[in-house]
Length: 194
Image 1 (cartoon, rainbow, N blue to C red):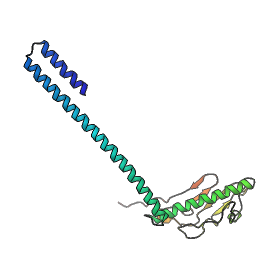
Image 2: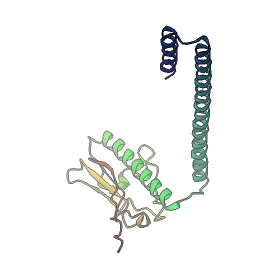
Image 3: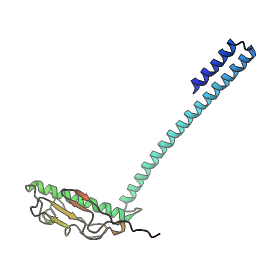
Image 4: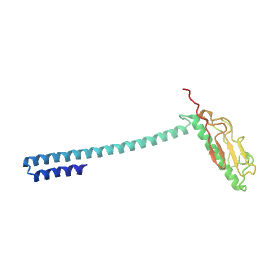
C-alpha cells in the first residue's frame, strides 16, 4: 500500500512537471507526499505496537491457563474439586487401567492366558498389590465385574453397578476389554419437551 501511494505521488509529480505545472504546485504535491509518508509510517508504527500488545496478551493468557491447570491439579490432589462425581469417574477409569496392567503382567507369565478370577492377580506385588475400590461406589466393584473368556485368552472387567449415574454413564461402565481397551457408554440425554 505504501509503495502504491509513493509511486502514485511520484507519477503525479512527473506528469504535472512534464505538462508544465508551476513550481508552487510541485511544492504542494511534494508536501502532500511527505504527509502521506508520515501517515503511513505512523500507521506502520501503530500496527507494530498492536502486534506487540497481542503477543503480550497471548503470553499472559498462556501463563493464566497454565496457572489454572496447576491450581485445578492441586485442588484435586488435596481432595477438593469442582465436580467430585467427574473425579470419581476418572479415578474409576484409572483403576481399570491398573487392573488391566496387572492382568497383562499375569498373562505374560502364564502362556498368554488370564486368570479365572481377579484373585489370581491380587494380592500379589508382582501383578497388583490390592484390588482398588470404585470411589463412586466406595467398594470393590471390579472383582464381581471380572470375567475371563472360555479359553482364558480374553477378559472383560467392569465397574459393576450403576455407580456413575450422575454423569449419565450406563450401568456396568466403565469397563476394560482385553480386545478393545477402555470402554464408556453414556445414557442418551433426556429429550426436552417443547
